[in-house]
Structure formats: structure tokens, C-alpha cells
Length: 257
Ligand code: APR
Image (cartoon, rainbow, N blue to C red; front, side, top):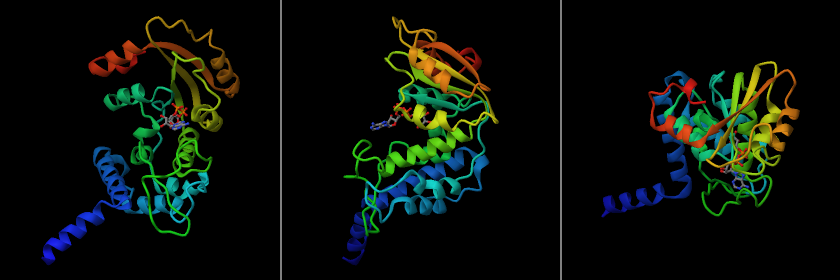
């Protein structure tokens, strides 16, 4: 009976939200470190502790972006100069591509982004508990824990962008460069022209799309917001070309666009 009770208790504890969130994040961390050997200075338990310090004990609308500074400093990773890929409104295709191709690296392919991609979390005022449901969502309040994390992680990723940098934008929508997006409102503002050489827009289009690099007004805004020291380029990339590169790894990355 004691054994059954212990097992039952163990299972119950293991399925509380904080228990499973910790498990998910530590598992992701170990998997990432195993598959990407170079970042062995990272300690998954320490990273978890820094993560929790950002939001535990705080109301779900009271976590500002800088609460994640100590988490960001606890993760060590060399920037992937000349391979960094930003995106906006192209999440699915960009990650389908980088999952197959290590020639480009998005924030979600770095340890920090990989740990938290797709997850929801929050705390509660004067409580040590961690929740993964009933948290304020992205648009409920400005300082919600998930939004604040992505803002600060994106700012740090952009500030480290070096060499030739690319961004995959959606050519099938009105405003591929949307001022309210994280790419426009956080990342472009954090680019450092002393370590970055160029920005190439990869404008993903579907058959029948009429948009061009030259005709789109929002891309003019992007160009105007960049430091003139940075070289700007824009290429139309048909979605079918990306799909082909996803399914045919023998095609060299340089030949994808
Ligand atoms: N509500 C819910 N989720 C949102 C919202 C919102 N209003 N806005 C953004 N998100 C989340 C979603 O998960 C979405 O898929 O952020 C993701 C990216 O949003 P996009 O508008 O497609 O792009 P953007 O805001 O430009 O962010 C992408 O930021 O994550 C970094 O480096 C990454 O360059 C990339 C950029």
C-alpha cells in the first residue's frame, strides 16, 4: 500500500504544471547541449533557476522585459555570424527550413529560444507557484511574462547579429515589415552596424503574388530605419523554392535563393 501511495503521489506531483514545465525545459536543455556540443559551459539547472527568478512571485501582468536579463546572461552561446536569420509572419516555413538546414540560425534555434519556444508560463503575486495555464496572454497586458521574454531575447539576439544577416518576410500580406512586429519594434532597433555588414530581405511569395521588393512601401520604411552603413538587399523567394530546399537537402543553401 505504501509503495502504491508513493507511486501515485510521485505521479501526481510530476504532473503539476511547474513540475512538467521544469521537466520540459531541462529536457530541452540537455537535448540541445547533446546535439550542439559547442556550448558546454551551460548548466541547465542554473538556467532553470535564472528563468524562474524572472517571474515567480510576480503578478502575471507585472513582468517587464528586463526581468529576463539574468536568464539571458546565464546562457552562453557564440553568435552565428553570417548565418543569422530573422523573420516576421513566416514562423512555420522559416523553422521548417532551419530544422533541415544549419546554414541559417533563428532565435528559436539558439539555446535560449529553443528552451522556451511554444511554451506559456506565469507566476502569481506572493506565491512560489508556477503556472502554465490561465496565464495572461500576449495581448492581455504589456508586461506579461511570455511577451516580455521574447522581447528581451529578441533584443539580445539582434544586438549580437554580425556579418551578413537575413530576414524572411511574408510577401503575401499587406505590410511585410509591420511596425508593431517584434522584428520592426525590437530587432531592427537593436542591430549594431559596427558588427553587422548587411541585411538581406527574403520576401517569401506564393504563385500569383504581385508584390515586388521595389513596390512594397513597408520595405521602404525598413530601408529608411537601417543605419546607412549597412548594405540593404531584397530578394523575392518563391515559397515553392523554399519547400524544394526543405525536401531536397542535396541542394546547396547558396542555391536556395
Ligand atoms: N499574440 C500572440 N502571439 C503573438 C503576438 C500576438 N499579438 N504577436 C506575436 N506573437 C508571437 C506568436 O507566437 C508569433 O508566431 O510571436 C510570434 C512572431 O510573431 P510575428 O508577428 O510573426 O513576428 P514578429 O513579431 O516580427 O517576431 C518574430 O522575433 O522571435 C523573434 O527573432 C525572432 O525575428 C523573429 C521575430
